[in-house]
Image 1 (tube, rainbow, N blue to C red):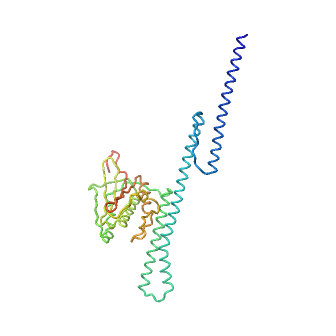
Image 2 (cartoon, rainbow, N blue to C red):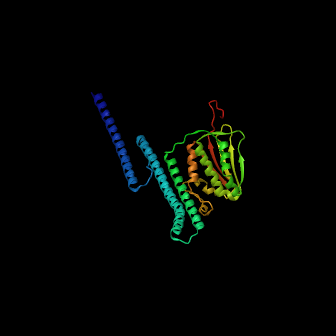
Image 3 (tube, one colour):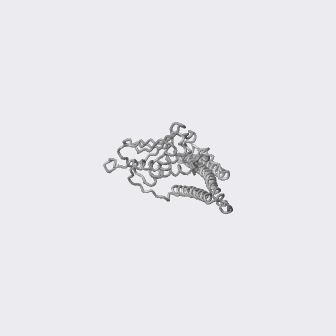
Length: 321
């Protein structure tokens, strides 16, 4: 009987201890949950992304807090990315307004003169009409570039990839610029393997990439008097195409920005050639849609190189075709 009473007393004490321990744990967890509630409420009200303190004493609560901190980090990055895109969009719209306003002002000025001036000669009228035509074409090119970029970034434009002879395309493209290159007094250097090189690409898109890069080199590198195209075809590596010049180049701190929408160097709008700032962005998107990547390296007045890579086209036996 005494033994039974003793066992009952011990059991009661153990049960009481268990209840107390459980109560303390529940109380601690309640405090933790209250802390989480207050902290999250504060973050929502103030719009901050302050991280939550992680409690090591409770494994489940600790796991929850770590997950919430990762979620806060993701939200913070998403907000920063959105803010950056919004800023970039405002900058782009501002530049588009500038680039549209300039030729349209010229168009309006000449058209007003044609309408209200009766003393103009036929030659003067023809010259003004030609200038109006040129500026209208400039506006149209800008709008086409803007919508092309919008289609590329939205994914609406599908690029069908096939076997393209990059060697021949580079030669033909450079020949198409012969008169302009000669007019600018540019010496051309081609470094293309004798054996044709084939890549997996979209010929129309690749033609535009080369067109944009050569035009860009002519615009901003003509003072170096040299322009070239090189094709590097190393075994086991993607094919690399380089378009280079020896002009004034791009300052090192600007290298990471050259492919941004509407990016132009500070003095580029005052040069003989004016760009919309969309050409290199479109070029980058096209290269990426063909599975490649594009980079720039520039040492002012020595060598500025735009390089892009594409997958070499091979047959089923791993041989280049």
